[in-house]
Length: 130
Ligand SMILES: [Zn+2]
Image (cartoon, helix red, strand yellow):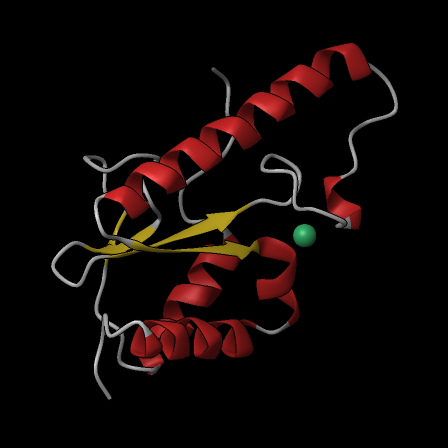
């Protein structure tokens, strides 16, 4: 599989620094977990994926539109990515993880707002306390 994707993309770095400012403790790229979540805390059971809009097909996002050429190639490839993502999320949730998908376009727009939303949701789900 050629999921062309580098570690430590700019949106990932932006989100991480905002999460740190809010006091969230986490580790990076948990290789032992399904889908290797980008940001994770195994003790507190939360996992955050930072997804590129194109590779992971962000719904209704302009950046997710597939190339006009070579649809026969990209269609199945991208569909397989989406399927794989949902399997990973499902299996993490089955192990009791609170899973968040943060999309690159939304982080680029306002990393602080996304970080706040994530932290608020983790508090609501009692993964972290106030
Ligand atoms: Zn997007």
